[in-house]
Length: 314
Image (cartoon, rainbow, N blue to C red; front, side):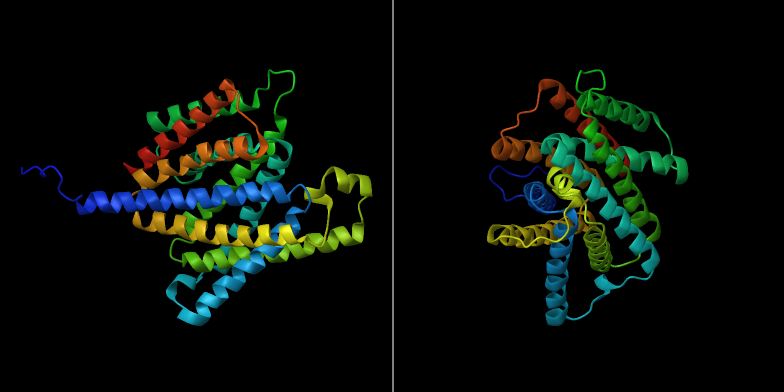
C-alpha cells in the first residue's frame, strides 16, 4: 500500500477528524464558559430568572433565524409530549447542577454531573436490553469509585452538596434516553426549541409562586439562587445574561452538529474535555485548586465515561 509522502497535505479523513475535534472543543468551551457565568449570576439572581431571560433570548434568536431561512425539517417535532417531558427533565437536571455549583466548587460539581454516562449505561442495561459486558461493568465500578473520591463520605466534612449534581445527572440521563428512544426522528432544533419553551413556562410559574409565598428576607439572602423571585438585573447582569444565551445556543448547536456528523467513538470521549476546562475556570475565576484526591476521582469518572463511549461505538 502506498504511503503518503512527507509534507503531503492531510488526507480527507484526517481533515474531517480535525474539524470534528475543533468543533467539539469549541462547543465545550462555550458551554463551560456559560456554566461559569451561570454560577456567577447564581450569587445574585435566581435560577428561575436566569432560565427565563436566557430562554427568551434564545427563542428570539431562533425566531430570527426561521424568519430569514424559513421553517425547515430540523424544527419538526412529531412527538411533542415526549419533547415536553424531556425539557422538564433537562430543567430539573440543570436546576440541581447549578444548585450544586452555588454550594460547591465549579469543577467538583462538574465532575459529579458528568457521571451521566454511568446512569445512561445503567438505564440501557435495565430498560433497553443492552449487554452488560465486562467493559461496561468495569467502567461503572470505576466511575462510582471516582464519585466516592470526590464526595469523600469518610471525611470530617463530606461534600454531600454534590448529591444535587449526582441526582441532576440522573435526570439528564433520563432526558438523553428519551431523546434516543422516543425522539430520534424529530428535528434537533425543534427539540431544543420545545426545551426553551418548557424552561420559560416553569420559570414563570416559579417566579409567580415565590411572589405569592414571599419567603423571609433572611432565607432569600441565604439562598438567592432558589428563593429570590424577579429582581431587576444590573447593567452587568444583562450583558452576562445575553452572553449566556449566545454561548449556550452556539455551544448546544455545535455539540448537536458534532454528534450528527462525527463518530461516536471520537465525539463521546471528547466531551470529557469539559472537566479540565471547568477546572481551569475554577482556578482562574474563584482561585479553587482541586486536591489530588479530587483529581483522581475526576480522572476515574472521565476514564469510565470514555470507556463506555468507546465500547458503545464499537
